[in-house]
Length: 451
Image (cartoon, rainbow, N blue to C red):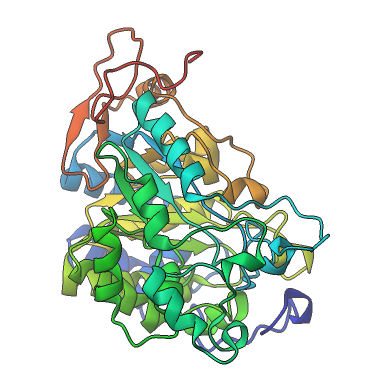
């Protein structure tokens, strides 16, 4: 497994580079006429023309304006958000992704370890208390994404299978929970604990599903089916990073490959779960990789129709191994953020919703992305840990009142939505106080008392 310190910042030799036989004007004309774009078309729009270096400001604005019109034609003017809480169960993980500072090496959590770390593991009872408190406040979605703790198993039956291996730690990355100071329980136990009061439970990434089936020949459909029975309502299409294997081999060599990610997503949808899709960009990849990633998402949606949204995630570089080793010196530029959102809107003609992230971009830039093709502005979060630990600087919570103030500033209506966008409620600007109303215990009361 490669380490960031082993990589030569100037020596990444990729097969795929941003070179095409297409032209910017041809690609733009196709997009303007609603013709389905090719990967080469997407590269030309992402680069504002590969024939010249850098981003051409005038061409960029043309792409953004076109994407904004397409957004209005596709989903209308409303900016949506969801009232949610993050409950990440554990930071313990041995995958070793070079873009991540969320995880802590799992051996640090073992009994007798004196290794210093700021990580955590929550018991199912602790997870239930966190979610119950959030639901009582009016939250109606819980998002849970966690490290791949070696003690995690799908359920007790899976644990018995893992323990039958001669050397489970080496063969299937499993150690029994008694080896650790805190027992995380099983995936099923955690989901059952968080599934309170009809809250929508959005959890289990493809990588977590891979972890939940390790050591078995079970299908992803059966794994997600078991989790659905435990309370899972939808699955996040994270762990995607860049869905091109030559990039994954650099930034996350311990993770599943592109086809395995696709297989897991197809399994989730076959089990009856809607899913999201993501891209984490702005590290070692180039515009060709970004375009090829979009192709994977569009092809998957063509086959399944179960993707509810696309979420571009601009790489937060501070405090990550890639940055600390000098492999990258920054994340994506704001121009790149805007073009990625715009081209996603134009290329993903079968995915209705594109998200702008205030966690990654901040309020001001996040609102600008809403004029580049995005229509959704994330959620209230209440607790955000992954981006914060990577050096994110934009806080952990947005109130409904914050949303009213921000979205009003760009002259667009505001609506809260369900996770799958199946239900929306227009937020009337009547002076407040403002709070969610779609949740089982939501009555319009602000989520926090001092909002």
